[in-house]
Image (cartoon, rainbow, N blue to C red; front, side, top):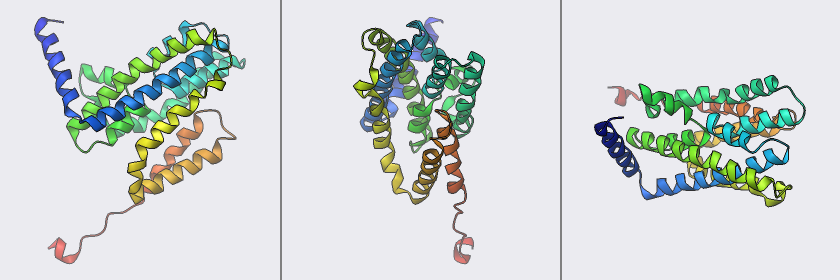
Length: 243
């Protein structure tokens, strides 16, 4: 990287950071903190199940998708085939297809797209679609994605070390932090009737299918809730408005 390109990159990062307000940055910080806490639980659980310390950290950097990582390690720990675990993880990560269709403007083009696609996860997409305009969408996507990229494997590393000392990680209650933070973030969006209907339908599907499907698949099926929003038709223009 030349000196000129390095200066341009630093200035661009500063400009991206200043695009968002204090409220948005606080929300992103809360999300990344929750991701780090769940990462601690993930790393501790992985080591307690007999996996080496480096494995959850490596998966956290390369995969960067918590549900598929939990599913992969769970299947292997239960004696399943690694190939079956990989296929299950890919199936769970199929939710990234609609994610990509919803935030193409934020991901970027050219060489940035390769890194941008890697940063695509539940948190970066959720923070992006909540923004009102293109500059804020891009800023939210990249800041959240970079934060998760640091928080998730970093938390996994801390958890992996703790897992060699604390064997009963469920007693810490770390798994409750992340859902609570996400719920607090999405509550304002539920004021919209269409959004509320879609969330209700998706949540019902996930709850009904959870007892019968492996971890992660109910969330994937919950995406069918967007069909409720798709059925909402815009009001037809009146004769006066059409004129």
